[in-house]
Amino acid sequence: MAQPEPLSLFEAHQLLKQWDCLTEQPESSTYGHVQAALHSIVSHSDYQMLGICADGLEQGKKTLVAYAQACGYTVDLSTLQVRNPPSTTSSGIYIKYNPESGLLYASEYEGSHRGVLVACQSAHESGLNELYGHLPLDLFEA
Image (tube, rainbow, N blue to C red; front, side, top):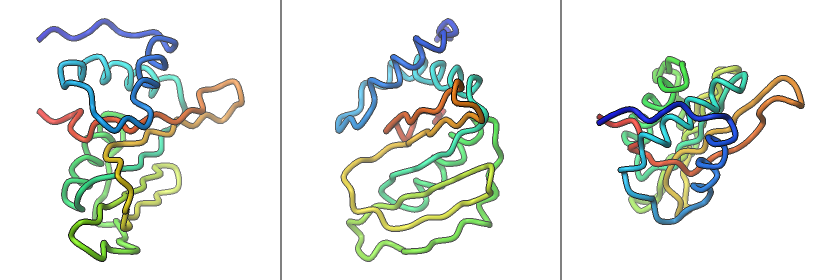
């Protein structure tokens, strides 16, 4: 499958905003475009914080590692703190990762959304400061 053309910041923003709070995920055939859009916004922000809403801890950790790598980070999962473990098997998990502070924790998540939140942060007001998601958990699975 051919790689999509690089996207401008405007095109990337428009594409990723389509995913905001979706309850049904679009077809995986669009994943190449979403990956290209994510790479574009990453290159236009100083750093990104990641929030993973998953069915379980293992799925969440796998997704975190894949997204972190796509954003240019290496995650040390041994530092993951589970602050509020799921109280039932039907509860999900939320993992938050801030590469600037090193904050990495997981807690119970009872919401219905599943996916990844990418919060782009810039040091300057004119930079990219935007939240995208919930992006697909399996966006970077081979």
